Length: 327
Image 1 (tube, rainbow, N blue to C red):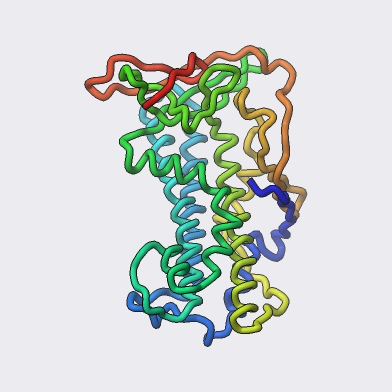
Image 2 (image 1 turned 135 degrees about the horizontal axis):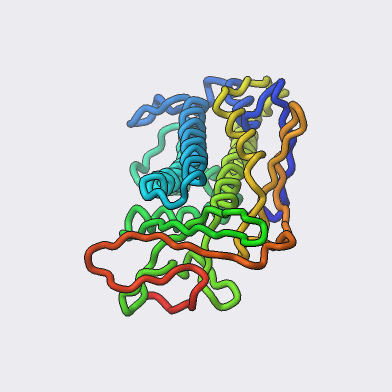
């Protein structure tokens, strides 16, 4: 993730929105070109607002489904619903990232070279903002793009894993991306789930939802930095002091729920960098990275894996079992 680290405090009396939201209305209309393109575009702030709300809805829906699943982890319908919303959440964070490039295009006049992906359009037409943003953000989203592409284009899916800490009687709802071994066994995709102590691994919802929430805010800051640099270089424009835009109820609800997520993780996640969200009255803090140690009594685990057949596959492997190479 971001080697420089991240630490911000948000005041709910002012706003819990990313800083970039407080700057869009300060951009002079003369520097906004979205409606002049062959395919007219919304105002950059409108593009951001829609994408930010969509990923926020996906976060809330995943948390709702997680709450229901925890009440009855053997319920197949609740399990499938949770995995579906998690798949949607992966798609939404990747879409949010893609829309960042569309915002940069909306700040650029139309150019001779048409078509291509947003980043390619910026690069081919000589706009440096695409490279600036990509160099600061591509590594942040690489793993999430990989998972999303596997789920959308490679006929792979998410499967559930329930991990219980025996001594503490705590359940850690988790999941993994299915892959295929050369012999046809369906098992965790080892290109996504790196081996841990010689066995395959998984991802906890407690970890992954936190990470995606953090990604929304760090990507927003990277985009703001890029816009500031771009407008300064092309127009000698400097933003005045930000004028706060009040957050909505969904944003505050997600902040509270992320702060309240349990801090129990899978064995392979302890020692990893993760974001910390915490609340003290009206102050909300988001900090990255933080590294947690496994709590006492968390060594003895019970695992329950859940998958459904496809009508043809006959062999299935689950996380924390022997790792085999996959094609």
